[in-house]
Amino acid sequence: MLKELLLAGFLMAVGLSIAGMGTHLYQWLAKQQAMLRYDGKTFLHAFGNLAMSFVCGPYIMLQMGWRQEAGGTLTMSMALLSAFVAFGWAFITGLIFVGGYFTIVG
Image (tube, rainbow, N blue to C red):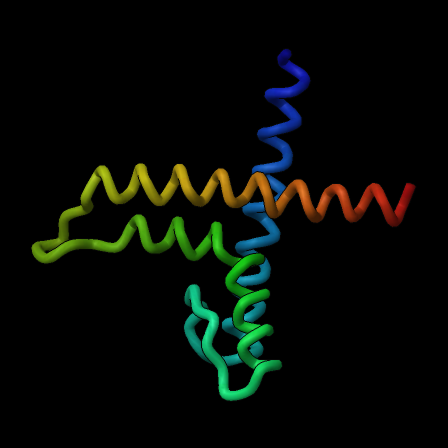
């Protein structure tokens, strides 16, 4: 049972690492803030934004949870909810990328 728990933690770590790397890479190349969206000027832009939102979503969700309210306070329920969603999403992202890696490599 410990092996499964460590595997789940590893998959979340990989997913969150890829999300963070993808977010910063997108912001560097596109020179705009990364956000969850599916709009675009053309169908190709919309599909690119959707793919970026899927890969970078966990990192963006964590950033959204730490947004300050009026008066400089954090809402604990919003931070916990965004962390719960982000780590679940990071598990899915990590599962896809690690599964793809083992499919290609070996």
